[in-house]
Amino acid sequence: MAEWVYPLGSAKDGDWQVSLGAHDSSTAVDGWAHTGLKVAELAPGASVSLEAAGEERIVVPLEGAFEVTVDGVVHSLRGRASVFAGPSDVLYTGIGREVEISSPDGGRVAVALAPAKADYPTRLVRAEETPVELRGAGNCSRQVHNFGTPAALEADRFIVCEVITPAGNWSSYPPHKHDTEKDGETALEEIYYFETRLAAGSPVEGAGASAAAGQDPIGYARVYASDERPIDVQAEVRTGDVVLVPYGWHGPAMAAPGYDLYYLNVMAGPGRVREWLISDDPHHGWVRRTWDAEKIDPRLPFTP
Image (cartoon, rainbow, N blue to C red; front, side, top):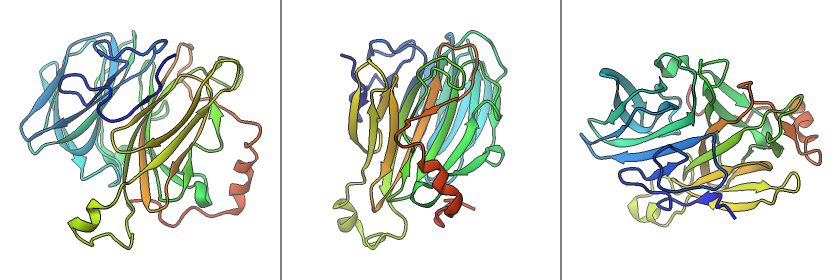
């Protein structure tokens, strides 16, 4: 049976802390075909490279600033202090192009990817261009950065976004699926890459290194079967962990009280339409209707 949960370090490959689904990934995932992810932690002045391949890519700074060279052209990504500091510049590289990523001061970077055939131009999406969506309401409020969605980016196959969920809130909720090509639904694999932190305003925030050392920021992720295909994931997640969703109902992604939760989503599938169309679990879809009477969590947006 395929493995769907990869704690930090379990999908390491050379300089990459995470390498899953890429054409050169050494960790094989049975039945996984449409999406991939690489994550690297770079020391000051260090770099990683990707050879030209038949996969489209988008470079997402997680922490720090980066320079990305695509076929000899250098693009500067201003980056951010952390994934909880609002959107970052990102770079779409298209397909069949060599990519080198370096960081003058060091940092952590993700590369979302998908096997692709149609070629689209390299595009730098600045942080201020990124559509920021506040989704849900009440304790289902979350913040979505839609830099790699069909409305924001021309691409061949993938849909890429990132979500920040305040401490104690649920996101990816109600549970939903996108595992069947039919009217109103598209078949898409999905990757969740997680990061966690002590929530801003916590009583122990700023209490010193000894207090910080006693914390263990966690979140939780759930995936379960929508048909005869078996899957049952109930995962405790931390910074650097990855959960793969090949099919099935997924959600909630839960931010534990006291800890904010971030995840980077990468989706793509075999269908001819690049669109995120979902079906809610009929047991829980009614929850959406309650949001009309609730307000967005006042902790959002995380940045003005």
